[in-house]
Length: 504
Ligand SMILES: *Cc1c(COP(=O)(O)O)cnc(C)c1O
Image (cartoon, rainbow, N blue to C red; front, side, top):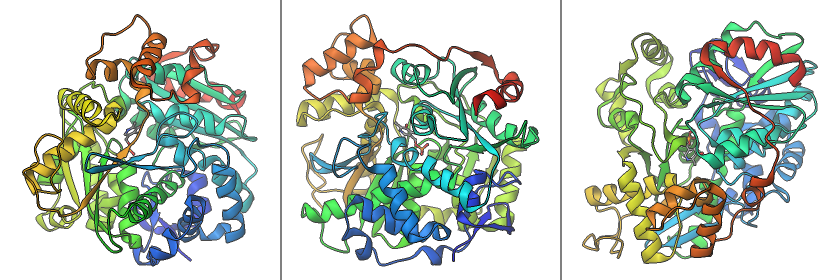
């Protein structure tokens, strides 16, 4: 049975349900399966099923202590009736690429795929571990985790949630989704700082607040929780299955995935899919102007000491990508991972050895694109193919263009130029949010004037494009504002201690 270890101490071993319950290892490391060979399988045994069947196959590998029957119940509880598409994550052909739409859940971003599941996994984990304390979930968000987590954990018995989001660092619609969140156990609070401040703050809370605090234990709904990451592996298999069904590939062909990246969670799920045996060619790590990962994947030098850029893809405005630590463990081993993470927190940088960099480069490619390049991708693709992308998906599209120019990665295509006639691998772009979450940027990108309010922009976007507004967003504007607090980073600890009891 697979066991989970901390990336900073492989002698610390726990079951999958305990890893989900804890969120983060006590030494500050992240939980990962000790041995990757134990998650390997024949991908044919996954892709012959529907989405829920694929989820069961993947979850059973990673969460063996739940038992197959329980996993089947939890998968149904997580996905039945929650997504507006029967495929859950449908694949669409756009030009000569494929877009995997991950935003058909309740809050219209890909975070829903995992955050529909995590509360169910966590509630069961309490039972499996005879855990009777109440749980307070602490979560930092760059915009989309917040609303998806508030929605997922709303009124879950014995559990409360506090979400910290960067004050003035999220889109108006993202903010509205959080401040109007329902549930008697939810709380969203703005922090005067950026996402990294909020995330570093939350990680510090786990170390600094002795818990249980007032009878309440702390856990996390960020992608540092392995229960967030594993449900995301499933849609890589789903993409492959849909490519086969569409006749876009023949069985065994390797596929490129372009992933709009922030905290490295989504793309890390792709790495797990590859290690399970899915035919993956390259994982293209797409960044916006916050290009710390692009430099890292090119040179092996991780350097967070750089200007933080606020962009039109706010969910990717991140300089410290937590999940990279998981990849480091597998590539560099425990000792180096510990050293690098210490160097990162003390000096803000670290450098891989050339051998380590080569290993990473054999799978990952880092490319960045700025707001303008993203915006022109939205415009081009809309005008050429009548397909509307959000500001994060478009960064991945723009990065894929650059990759194609560099690697001749795909066949003739009327998107820009079609000189690259040599067919190598089919490209799938992960679409991480509905364009309606970022209406003003999207309208500008397709050459339209802005209206006076976000609500009017949303209506206008619908009138012009005909793309349906997701149900969760169309009703947003009339809702009561329930969460108004704005605090300093330094006050996060006091805030949590004050709220621990009443939140759960
Ligand atoms: C969270 C998010 C990302 C980044 O995903 P990571 O797993 O943090 O790399 C990209 N796009 C959108 C819309 C997101 O919400």
